[in-house]
Every structure is written in C-alpha cells, then in structure tokens.
Image 1 (tube, rainbow, N blue to C red):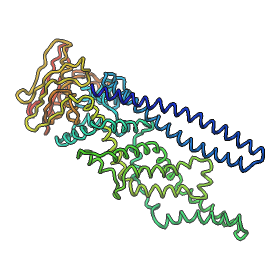
Image 2: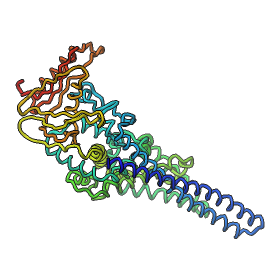
Image 3: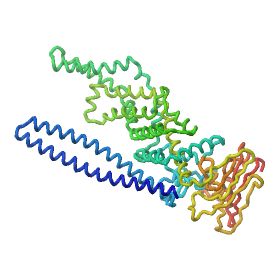
Image 4: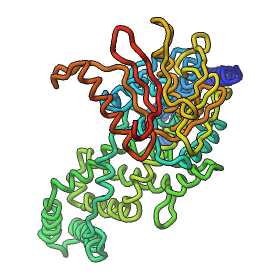
Length: 527
C-alpha cells in the first residue's frame, strides 16, 4: 500500500533525524562542560596572578559563550522532542494499518452511554471501538468534538457535504496533520477542561480599565520609590514619608486579596494549555484552506480588531510569565514596592477586553480541526473506500461490497445492502456464528461514518438522512430493577416513538432469544 510506504519513509526519516540530533545533543553536553572547566581554570589562573582585567575578561567571555551554547542546546532539545513524537506518530499509523490499533490507549470509554440510541451496540466508544481506531485528537475539547460527530449526526445534508470537502482537503495534507497532532502531543499531559478558563476569560472588572485608576496605580509606586531614593541620598526627606507610601501600598494590596489571587492563579494554572493552544492556532492560520468549511472556521480566529488568535494568546502567555514572578521568595517585598499584582490585573483586563469573549470560539475551532483530522486519516489510509452520496426522497440505504471498517482486509467479508426503495425491512437468516450480527453492525457503523462526513467501507454507498436506532446488546439493570426482557421492550418502545418524529428511522434489531432473529428496517411513520 502506498499509504504504508509513506508512513515507513516518514518514520525512517524522523528516526535518522533523531539519531543525528542525539549525537549533536551529546556533543553540546561535552562542549558546555568543557567551556565551564576551561573558563573557570583560565580565569582562576589569571586572577591568582593578579591579572584581573584578563581574568575578568576570560570569565565574562566564558559566561557569554556558555549562554550561547545553552540557547543552541535548547533548540536541539526542542527538535529532538518533535522528531521523537513524529516518529511515534508514523509508527502508530503503521500500527493502525496493521490492525494493532486496539492497543491504543485512548478508547473514549467515558463517552459510552448504554442509553444512547446506537453507540453502545455499534462499538462507537470503548475498547475495540471506532473512536479508538481513528482518534488523533489531543485537546480536551477535541476529544469531545470527535465524540459528538460520531454520536450526534447533523440535521441537514449540506452540512455533511461541506464536511466531506473539509475532510478530503485535510486527508491530502499528511504533513500538516501530523505536525498539528505533534504540537498537541508535546504537552498533552497538561491538557485540562478549559471550561473554567473560558469563564475566567469572560469575567470583567471595568474598574481596572479606568484611566484614573490605571494612572494612579502606576504613578503611586514611582512616587514612593522616588521618595525612598531621595531619603537614602539626601537628608531633605524625612523617613516617615516613604514609610507612609509603603504603608499605603501595603493597604491597597490587602483589598480583595483572595479574589485577586484566584484571578491571577487561574491564569498561571492554564499557562501550558494556553501555550499549546497558541501554537495550534498559529498552524491553523498558516494553512491555506480551500474548502469553504475550513475557510469559515479560520474566519473565527480573529478578534474585533482583526488581530489573529495565535498572536493574542501569545500576548496572554507573556502576561502570565509576569504573573509567575509571584512564586519568587522576594515577591512580597517587590509587590509592596511596585504594586505588581495590580499591574498584572490591568494587563489581564486589557487582554480580556480585546480577546476574552473570543476564547471559546478559538478553542472550539481547534477542536473541530482535530476532529476533522481524525476522520481525514480514514480517507488517507483507505483511498479505495467510497465517498457516500446523499440523496433526498424516500428513506433508503444502498451499498455495494459493504464491509465492517474495524475488521482487517484478511477477515473482512463484504456484502450488498439495499433497503428502503422496494424493501423496508430485511430479515437476516443463517446459522449460528455465520455473521448475522456483524452484518447489522456493518450497516450501522458505516452509516455513522457517512453522517460524520468520512468515507465508508464500501465500493459505493448512497443514503438519505435518518435517525439510527439499535436494539442488540440488551442487558438487565439490577440497580433499577429492570430485567433483560423489560429493557428490550423499553428500547423497542423508544424506536416506535422515534418513528413519530419528523425524520425517518433506520433500525437494527437483534432479538435476545436462543435463536436470534436480526432485522434491518426503515419503518414508516405509522408502522
């Protein structure tokens, strides 16, 4: 397969690059150690000889050389980190093609819902699931977005068609997708639910934006520091004047100190997340999107002043760096003298005013790109699979050579499917272990893929928009005193009630008897 060869070549390339970086990395370690030893020895030698200018010059030169080498060394560490991540991404892609994806750690188990109309029966989430097979999202919202695309089909065919175009475009840009994934992996362990961050970004305190307040908070430390300098350098200023200034500033810092600490601490807690969000947004903005769907997503990545999202998040990161000084042991003294807390609050309020309300849209755009990239790998890995064709009119599904996407090529058996045009219900017969339930799940999971905008495992596939309902893996619930039989009745009742809705229903039913009788059907509204 050409896809497999592409992954192999990219893996080998990054492995070669990684080996080279390892050698350079070790070289810099030895070089830095040599500079330290030689610099200290030479500087000490000349200082012992009392040749202070020469010794001091050598010491200063050694310090600058060490700083330069350290900067270069950090770049090597950065490149090595990403080379390792990208090598592993291609190794994982080969594992996906080789059927080893069941070992992938993220199976989306928390998204499982036995009450959902179809996700449990069709293995959408959990071990050995569709989510585990395709998921390459790294952010908290990205995972939720992909789960939503698989569990909640859209209400209109044009939305699916636009998404198909976006997925096709991303499928053709492997390098961009892998780098996008790598940037998320770089600090994935730091990712958290951004809900609290979004609320924080939308909170406003106009008090710190008033010109008089800003001017006063900036002028007061300057005046106090001026009096302190004057007191120590002249005898014209009595000691109590700078002391009164410090007492006044100390009193100001005691006003709403707990609330202020929470605001500043929240920004610091999400620093790593904000850094990776900024990096992902910059990559999205750099991409030349062709599909209208992706172009509209990119248009969301600006504030009202047309400033790009990545630049704005980088500004927020710089403000957070200033806030990080609060962890310094000398910070209380510096804070009293300079009112540093208030300067940070002013900077944060200005950022919130220009960009705070847009943060949720920016993070959701990242999430959608991640989800689309996950679906795009299906098209890249399986270019021979069919792009679903959506039609209007009589509810129907027609497919040739339909197979289960989670089965390997060696074990997959394909069959035709035609229902809705002339036949509204199919009764599947066959002996035990003949693949009846697999055939039902094949029809259902491919319909889920079609509605998400992804290709399906078939030679051709046409369908209308329908609600999917299944009744296959029914079990009792002792906590609610519900037997298996009663649980099945409740599920069938939900299917019957769904037929009264405005949209047609596609159902898959496997009766829970010793001799199961699988059914596939599209009932009419009065069935």
